[in-house]
Amino acid sequence: MNRAIQVTRSSMPNLVDYIEEIKELWDSRWLTNAGIKHNQLENTLKQYLKTPNISLFSNGHLALEYAIEAFQLTGEVITTPFTFASTVHAIVRKGLTPVFCDINAEDYTIQTDHLERLITEKTTAIIPVHVYGNICNFREIERIAKKYNLKVIYDAAHAFGITVDGESVANFGDASMFSFHATKVFHTVEGGALTYGNTDLVPYLNALKNFGITGPEHVEYVGGNAKMNEFQAAMGLCNLRYIDDEITSRKIIYERYVEQLYDVEGIKLSLPSPNLKSNYAYFPVLFDHHSLTRDAVHDVLLQQNIYTRKYFYPLINDFSCYQGKFTPTCTPVAQKIAEKILTLPLYAHLHLDDVDRICRIIKSKLVLT
Ligand SMILES: *Cc1c(COP(=O)(O)O)cnc(C)c1O
Image 1 (cartoon, rainbow, N blue to C red):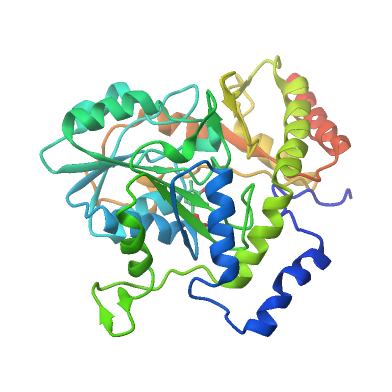
Image 2: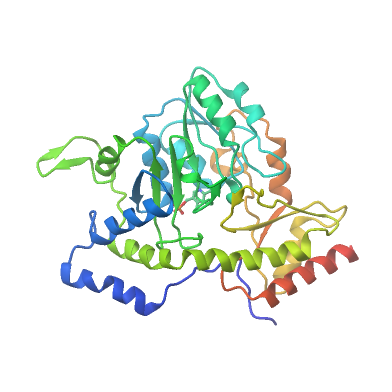
């Protein structure tokens, strides 16, 4: 049996670099609450993401929940069901109602032609998702949001470091949420961030994620706890030094997949548009073959000890926790994509030989079926 190939593996900095980074913490004994590493990471990320304001969080999901709270959203929020559980859970956990908009068949992001007719007098925001690092039609979303006075918070968990025509995705909409989970292109083990334009929100968000405390004897808000600690931030500082190498390594693997799969009958790829500097976070393949299903490809690869992921499947409308809870908005494209999409193994140190083997197995199966 061949050695297992996982769908993703975390990138690690050199152990000595990390030890060097955390050494100071043994002297300072300041382990969390806006410590030196936390503040350093905020500053370096601000530069890297070219954003005026950033707040770090213990994870991406809480960053999104706190954004919803900070913008004081109420009523209905428009999003798509073709996303990770976190996006919709955050809306529901903050007491709001998600309204599902369908996605584009080409890039799997929110279909802006469908957006306006979903807006009601209860709608307060749109939470679009940059799925697999494919960037939403942000100009059209901005136009609609302005027209109806809606907030826009991007789920940019997949979009770290991406620029469109040289413009950082961190600056689209009112805010963007990034995830620094261990499986993401840039990580702090667990972690996340919000980037946003309104500087007035900086002290508010900093207080909200620390129990609403605004001074030694002042608690102004009913906040929670979602702070990033010093060990997470130290991991981030180390990983950020290698981020360009990380993305370059991913690009090489990504292009090897494209080279071998782009003209194969029964396969559809969604490649980054030319005006975009991608981060090569995922390699999604749509299996649209006359007889071989996505599930069959998944199983064939699994037999060879190759792990792929049905990502995103099932659709959020089909989660058992949401059964019968929401008006079943029609999202036929999302339904179809969720049944046909498979993400292939992709991480910085995946061997090109393994990419070749994965493609060989897929192609031989497609031809034989
Ligand atoms: C990873 C992810 C999240 C959640 O981020 P965490 O840091 O794991 O909490 C949210 N949305 C999407 C699309 C993600 O991929």
